[in-house]
Length: 344
Image 1 (cartoon, helix red, strand yellow):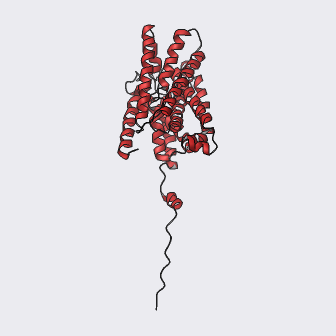
Image 2: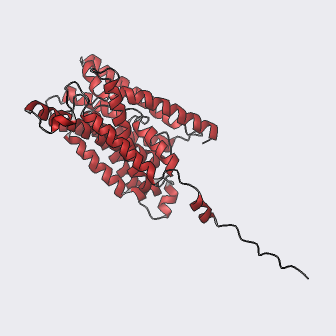
Image 3: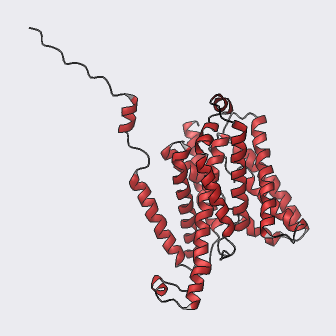
């Protein structure tokens, strides 16, 4: 008598196997990040030279209310707005250039915006802050366009060479800005935009940053188009996407965000590079999916670095640009080594 053989079960399809795998970011990860952001925000509100505690807000005097509303709250809002916007700008630029190591810090966009500030100070010294901001945006647009044109004309066999070209271009632009500043005795004022610092942020000085929040919303609305554009020009055109128009929109968003942040709080190095990389490594490259998490991570990263800079030498402060530069530089080196070992 023959024993009937058990029917062979077909292996689960790839989609089912993918669903069984644990995703890089779970809901509790996001909940923990929100909790960390809330704790850091609370700490930011009550760390400073002026003694202020949560209990003081129950019955504040005039001085305590002024410190809280004029200094602490605007500073916190400036940190959240600039951190989230710069992280999103780096994410958009990374997709449009199809290179993980391209960001406003490694493409020369920040340096071009700084050159615009120097030019605006020299030749349009009597103009308003908004006027200087418009000139900085124009210079950032030109500089980012030059960098993208270089990418189209030159062929690089190694993806790490691309940000090196941007860093060299930024170094040349920075040298030109420093020469003009030295020639016209503006070197001291250059520190206001070369190193990000939130210590001077008060009510009436951070409001332009709401424009970068609007730019972040626009980036989210066009996230699918940016994702398709990041697959390559030929692929995007075959799908019916107006490739050049989308790239120009991304160029404008990145330049506007970078220039406004540089004019308002100064340059924050590596922010638009390390945060998008860490998020996309765990969540993938779907821009619409990762953009909100990138904004949240960028805000939390800058906020934590700002709190660290305020407590290391209390009651003195270390500018947040210095803290982010050290932490971001270490993470950047780690990302480079990871790309090298995996042959990306």
